[in-house]
Amino acid sequence: MALEYAILVSLLEQPGSGYELARRFDRSIGRFWTATHQQIYRVLGRMEADGWLAVELTAQSARPDKKIYSAAEPGRTALAAWLREPVQPESVRHEMAVRIRAAAFDDPAALIPEVERHRTAHAELLDRYLAGEQRDFPDLESLDVQQQLQHVVLRGGIEYERMTLAWLDDVLVTLHKLSH
Amino acid sequence: MALEYAILVSLLEQPGSGYELARRFDRSIGRFWTATHQQIYRVLGRMEADGWLAVELTAQSARPDKKIYSAAEPGRTALAAWLREPVQPESVRHEMAVRIRAAAFDDPAALIPEVERHRTAHAELLDRYLAGEQRDFPDLESLDVQQQLQHVVLRGGIEYERMTLAWLDDVLVTLHKLSH
DNA sequence: GCTTGCTATGCAACGAGTTGCATAGCAAGG
DNA sequence: CCTTGCTATGCAACTCGTTGCATAGCAAGC
Image 1 (cartoon, rainbow over the protein chains, first blue to last red):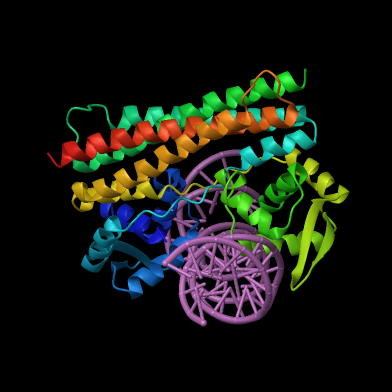
Image 2: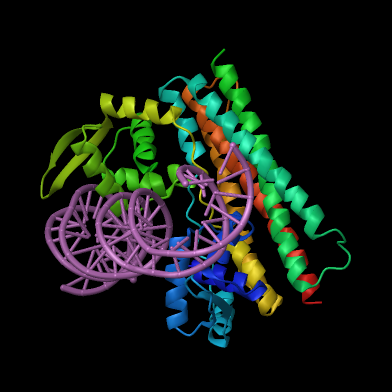
């Protein structure tokens, strides 16, 4: 599974605690790999046991110790090996597509409010991507390797959202036409 | 979960056995909702127990009975209720995006062969979508409700593949540039 | 004759991912 | 003062999804 590797990448970009990782997964990394804090803590434990991570304990008065994780050499090696493995075909889960085909057996107009809500959510995400691009990559001429790769992933996210918005508009036109 | 509903839609479009459903999930429905035959058999059993499906047993000499499933009224009702539920934010799993960001901590050039393989797979899928469009929707002026909804979903698949191909080309240009 | 592959269903075991809950102090706002 | 919310970690129980295997006859190709 790729969760280990997503965590490794995140820790290579910036060491942090399980809690911090969970919040990153709610924001930047979570754009292309979602995970709850439960999953993250469990996988962190396994990775630590496998020697993929280095841990630095920070004692905190009256709180549990904060564990700052960073990628260790075996983790880096595992990541390099994984990069060379064949990508397995992604398992697709497009709930909206199922719903649209389901609408043929009910009232197509019933789906319109949910498609509109969905469209709003994607429009907001696109705005956040574009704002993030302005903030994190103001000068596209002076990016290091890491930033260039982050930027090409972000461009993918932006194009995905644009495509999705155009398609949802297409869906709405179709649903309205069918509701005559 | 939406697997129940994906199965219901598939059975409403055309009744069939678990085996037939599994093959449909390898082809048309599987474009937006993947499932193995194991999952399908298990969920079919649960749906039958819940009265969502009607079953017709066909005795076959020297083979296990073939169970032909079709959607029953409670299934239709459940589907209609589900259509009106809020869509939960889709959980994203873009392994390629994780790998691209991972490439910053290894040799970016090492990723190129896998990206190219990935690109070929998506190009083939786009070709199959376009061929399927020609075959199943030759006359766009005379489609019934079901076909119009199937077609708008297919258009989404086509646009998704086009967007993905353009992005993978962008990724390849970026990786080549970083390998100087 | 033998292997390979297809139809057709299913069990068992495992791994991935989710949900609910628990702890516990600190800070902010009403 | 009291509630709400944040930091910070983790257990337990559950559901979802995957993998490997088993059965069993029939048809096609070598």
